[in-house]
Figure (tube, rainbow, N blue to C red):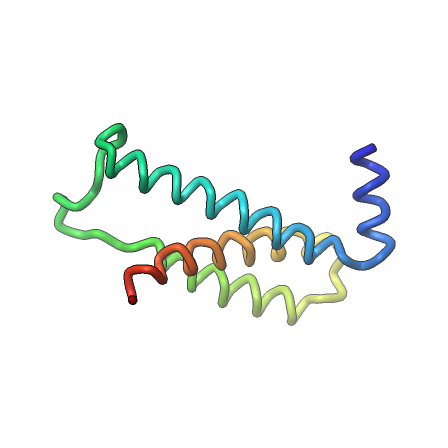
Length: 102
């Protein structure tokens, strides 16, 4: 059943969009869960360290690099799914951190 679904996605040229959506949602849920667990003191927080890099920075770097590589090497079929997943992860990290800007 899953193979049939993936095959239909590949045939409709929408596999990249699906991978972006799934990786975005998965990453966003994981990051939100970690943040809530840190607020509840179940996980340690990094606020006491000298250097704290918010996940916005790696998110933007992932967006830029995966977007550039994905567009530049679009004809390389084996590369497209990986760049779609990295793009979704970068988008989730960036959007999650965007709340700090408000």
